[in-house]
Structures are given as structure tokens and as C-alpha cells.
Length: 287
Image (tube, rainbow, N blue to C red; front, side, top):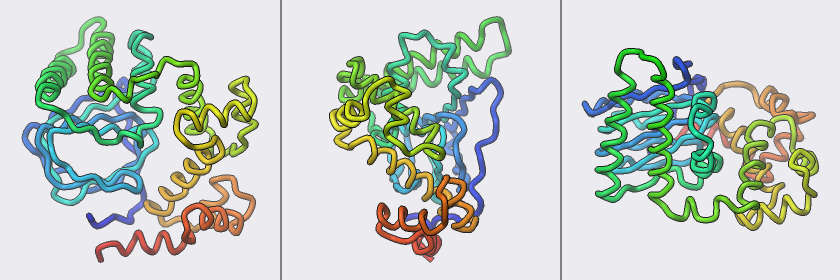
């Protein structure tokens, strides 16, 4: 396992027009700096070596493969990691340029991205995606022209559809009412978990009963609504503990706990370890 870094977690730098494509065909060595994403990101790797650490999980880099990272996730590359391929970043405001018919693909791929963070690619898909990423990169690097951003959004739509179809299980049933409701709930939790942990509040926003929301979550994910909320809150807490030196007290208040003791009890109940011990274990990995 790669050694982890303990410097403050830096937010991703803003990018013009909320869209960027970078070519790494020179097998550039990736900088091992911790980052918290403000945009969604796709790594298309034709060849790769090393590892990437996303939130709490370590993934070996072996091409060809795709990595999907969602806004808000934290990641760091293992030192000396390399890959040949493309890095594509886009914001929600840029995605709005894409036709509405592509919205389901984005929701399926990024609303619960941890369920399919890494996707292996067969040769036929590798060749097709290679062509698409090369095309969108060439279009991105052209000079400005009228409707250029709309053209890039159209290419992004095609790429997202192709990625969604690589794994049939990702798209199977995503148009069902329960799947749509589940994705709306995940999006609400992603944006509001620091201020709201009440299933009833989320159900009210979705105009359904708490029982209906919990049943829907269990059907789609095998977890109840409250468990999903707690999982997201624990993920947020772990990111703070991993990538910042802030005191536990500050983290507790930032996550809207009334006291540090309440936060510590919650964390230990769900993570099976105290916040301080979790941070200490993380800091000392591979020392």
C-alpha cells in the first residue's frame, strides 16, 4: 500500500468554463499531492503503473481502465505512478449544456461513483474510447469558435453514454421510478449531509414518506436511508481526519455535531475506532 500524505487537503483549482481535457500520452509521472475535487473527473488509462488512493480505497493502476471520481471525493497518487491516456474534468454547470437525454448516464455513473470507481476495459471498448478521448482533446485544444463549448458538451455526452454501456449493470433499470428517486436522494445527501441527518427531512424534500424512502434505498442498494446518510457522514469525517491537521473538536462542529464527545461516539460506533486512533493509524501507514 502506498504511503499516505498528511498535508492539508487542497481543493482542486478552478478551471475555465468548468471543463478541461489533459493528454498524458507521454506517460507523465503523476504528482503525489492530495486533492479534494470540485469537479467530476474521468481518467482514461490505456497503460498505467502504480496506484491511486481514493477516499479510503487503494486501486492498482493497470491499463486499460477507467476511473470515475465525483465532486467532493479526495484522492492521491502513489509516488512514481504513471499512465498513458487522458484526464477529463467537468462541472455540473458545463454538463447542463449536454442534451437532457444524457442525464441518466451522468446520474448512473457519478451519483454513486464509489460503487464503480474503477472500470476495466475490453480491447474493443479501449479502441473506441481512445478515439473519442483523442477527438474531444483535439477539439478542446483548438482555438475558440462560436459554439465550441456546445460541441465539447456533445462529445462528452457520447463518451458518457459509451462508458455507461461498458457495464450493462450500470444502466440496467436506471429509468425506473425507484432508481430515479434513489439517485435524487443520493444527490441530496451529498449536498446536505453536513447539516441534515434526518431521514424525515430528506423524505419531505422528495415528497414521499420516510418508509417509502427507506424501502426504495433497500431495493436499490441493500441499505436503508439512515445507513446511507451515516455512511456519507463517516466518509466526510474520514476525509477531514486523513487530509487535515484540524483538531477533532473543529471537525465535530463543522459536521454539525453538538459536542466533540457526540462526534467521537458516532465515529467509533460506525468506524469501529476513535477519530484520534483513526488519524494516527492513517498517518503511520508504511512509515
